[in-house]
Length: 338
Image (cartoon, rainbow, N blue to C red; front, side, top):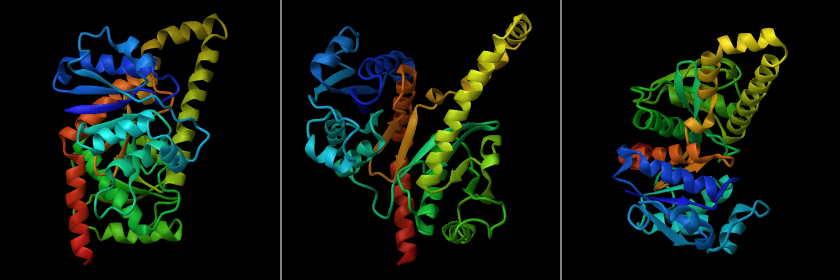
């Protein structure tokens, strides 16, 4: 298996990106995977060439250009044809790699991916699905930014694709799928949410449990939480900010006096576990569901650990044939509608 990694994407590129790739390749369970670093040779080669995998399981494809944050995604991809994300996506589109991983701009990554290898036939809107921590284990939140305005049929497709992701990648049997709304009753929510609820309730083969409220997401009320990209992105950013604020409050409180320092010492293991469970780097990145090939979009602030885990997500998605399963599901839906 070959995974194309955008070495120039992200706030800490290329150092953390390359380090994440090296850490991934050193783990014995990944010996069947090759990583293709895509980026500026003068910046990337010095960081990677000392690896024992250099030239065998670790390759470099030169891409001299880098896309900034000031251009619209479509314009950026059109203008910078030798940018690392464009070249990396092209490797996947041409079959030279099996999956794409990038911590660069989400919109640019999506446009580059969909231009290079398109979307699955029958999928109207690809969606970005990310994993969030809950008290019951990981859950899938979909969509978190790809589609601001949605029709009911889009939310239904997100639910189906999210269920495949939860089952195949996270290993959750018969994942519970819920629709994010402002109340549990099926008549609550916008017209789109109410209409989507009615369609999901009649959908065979999906473990749809109804609506879920925002407060229940992190209690593990569902394994897959479905919403449009506008709402999903707000939920994601709010949870990241809240987690960071809580960690800061706890750290400041722990250092207030000798009593709080003693208390923090006694609860050190519990606090460490809390931090681990809230750490986005544990989950690597978000999968672009509905794309014709595997594409993983990592957090812009990804460190080496996050990149290592993002490559792991890509590997698992390829191994589990996630895109093929979604393609079959989409085709069955097209045939049914006809």
